[in-house]
Length: 477
Image 1 (cartoon, rainbow, N blue to C red):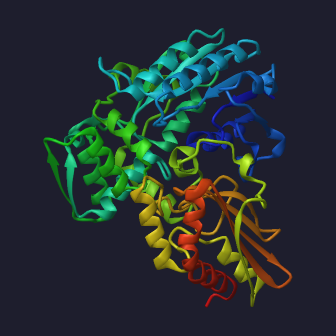
Image 2 (image 1 turned 90 degrees about the vertical axis):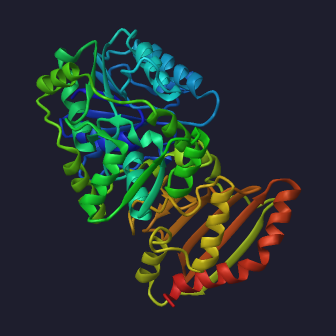
Image 3 (image 1 turned 120 degrees about the vertical axis):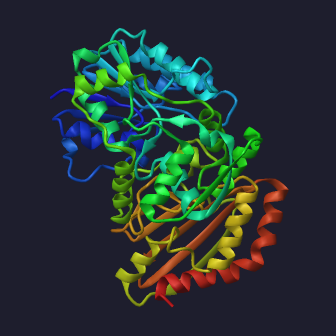
């Protein structure tokens, strides 16, 4: 059985590629910085999956990568707002090449962005740099360059959905007239798997997209048409990149740092080279579906709650780009604690309510939580906009509004959340069904004087929020 190294295995594309690769009879070596965030996909034998911890920014962690891999996917991307993300991407690529050169890897595939303009955004320029570094490896190399990806949970689609669903009338930046060539997520996966070990793709780059070339405005209006919504869009000739970023941030569920990177890229036309697109379609036999059909498929997946992965579950949607393990042990010393418990009527019903918290279901004590979410958004936090991927299922690493799931185990009746809202400290929220009662514990570890002042400032609201929440979760009333 051939072994395929999959980097970015907990990311939006990576999560979906696990099943795709395994379905071809390969063994998938899943690379992740944090094994606790890895969720085994349904229907795949665990014999076909090996999970290893590796951080390509840290060479000392790369010794776990097997020497006998046959192929690899490079699906690591950074859209961080930090000033050094270009250097981070360079380091990841160089370390990848160094370690994979020492393996039996025959073929590596990199999914990157379309880069056919003379002047590229900082983000696209960084991806082109990574492509050049990877192409110097001893292995055969293929770059697949894609533009906007349309799929349930993709950042691009969620922005389109947020804008059209929320705003009957839009006054928008002029970059909405920029042209792009989208591609449905199913076809992205098709191109990725059908290029693997295909010698006709070796040591080349290809543009991948559907045949539709649309402006962002046309994409929004097509979504409105599919949903049967009447929408009006007007573009302003003058709107600075910062204003555009704030516009996306406040209207959609995107983070500000992702909005900034997207705005920078959206000013650049991302159109496929016709000869390149035709060639890869001929080599792989993939015929991409039109944009409207991609929208219809995506909406049907969302309605059926079949969202395999979401950009919101990656750390680009949060204030942290870090390993969850350092927060798994909830501290006791130097912390403020709010512990409450309430007898439940039905174990199963109480458990279901706990694991359905947040998102459309909301938080018990809804009005105050909404105010807290609004205040968090005002200071650059995620607020309550991220929602959750599935209405009743939670996995380690999932985003739930302004929380991150640290531990979710229905069999134990236990859920631990870590706060990603803006705070002068760190906070945990834990639920445990134990001996006929629901135990609810909020823990806050303050940072300095401001952290302590914050705790005492919100303390009067805790009696309302936490007392009401534990009662509603336990009894449903």
